[in-house]
Length: 67
Image 1 (cartoon, rainbow, N blue to C red):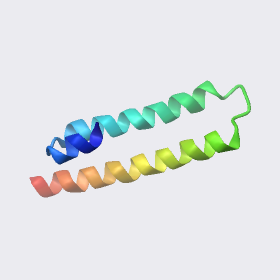
Image 2: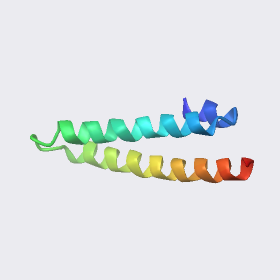
Image 3: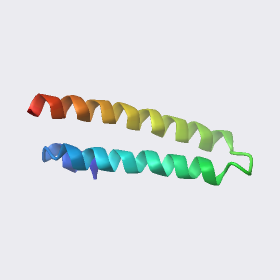
Image 4: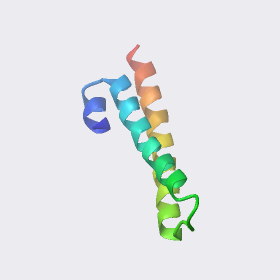
């Protein structure tokens, strides 16, 4: 879990977990390309992707501060 990894100072592991979340969003998008993606699901995927981007940026900043 990314939060536990951040708490432990394991920034590489946190980044990996965040990346896994983004991969799930992309997988969902690609799996639904041939069918009309419900608006609610599309909005959720977009929100999760944005949150993952923010979490990735925060993780990088924290990691830089540790070094």
